[in-house]
Image (cartoon, rainbow, N blue to C red):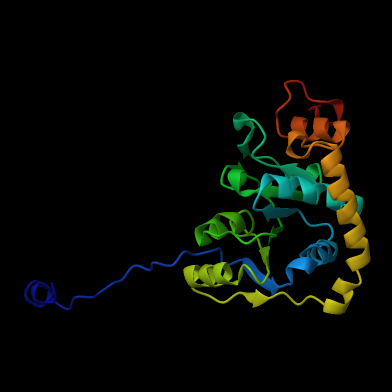
Length: 238
């Protein structure tokens, strides 16, 4: 090939296409190494530090999504779980401004690529994806159309290899999230109690067979996502 270039081309220029996966330039990507036992404390710390922001929290399983919803509600945060136990026709949501309903959302991998949600301020990887390409899809939910956004990954001791694979894929080192560890650990007692109550409630409601803990909240969420045929008054267009 090089011989043909010299014979046939005058002043050839070699251009190599990058094999790296890119993320938005306006996206601030951070990580925090956390012990697995303190991951929930760091999650609550970040959410309270970013109060008022529209957030997506990605989990690895449907059950983890629901458990976190119960857990965060026990701490006074409104959280709506969206996961794969919803009917297939409900998995895709287009052009919905979710922060009109609640400032915090949790999602699971099974629907992460089927949701198009504008104006998301922050994405949190509560569980690091084992496939680094899924990281690109997750963090792509924020920093859209020139807007800024933040993506924070909570990396425990069992997920370090996946974190390294992500950095290799995007071709950059992530910045460390500057959490104040002393403040984080002060949350431990409240977090432990909230988690205990969440586990108890999840068992009482039949786990994944019941996705919502409050009937009114279920109605609001389903209406907002367009799952109800007739909207309730609070969401009905005037």
